Image (tube, rainbow, N blue to C red; front, side, top):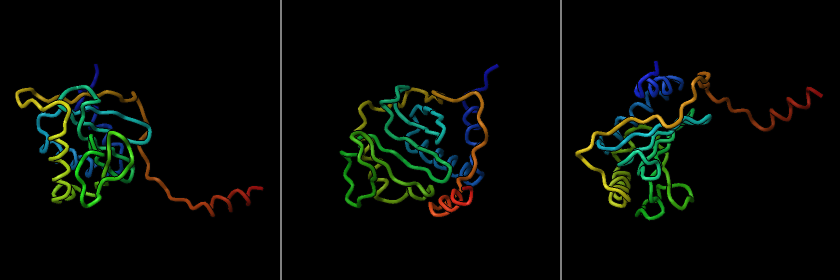
Length: 167
C-alpha cells in the first residue's frame, strides 16, 4: 500500500536535522496561509527538497517555491526579474525566477517581503481559484534514501594537507 502524500512529505522533512525540519514546517505553514488555495507540488532531489505553490498542478504555473537544503531555505518568486525590488532583496540572475534567503519565518512579515509576495501574486500567469480544493502532489520522491547529514565545512587548505600526508 502506498503512503499518503502527506505522510510521504512528512517522511522527507524528517530526514533533515531537527532544527531545519522545524524551519521547513514553519515556512510551509506560513506560505500556506499566504496562498491557501495553492496546489503544493513536492520534488525531492539529492541536494534539496523543493515545495512549489501554484494555482494548478502544472509546475510551470507555480508562483512560489521553497528550496530546502541542509542548512538553508530559499524562497523563489516567479516573475522575479519583473518584480519591484527597491531594497534589492532578490538574488539570482534567472530570466524567470529570483529568490531570497529565508533564515526564519519572521522574514515573511518584513514589509519589503510582503510587497514582493503581493506583486508576485498580481503577476501570476494563472489566477488562484478560491473555489477549488488545493492538493498536495508528490511529483518526485525516491523510494528510499539515507537520512540527510549535516554538511561539514572543510577548508581547501586542510584538503590539500590531507592529500599530502597520504603521499
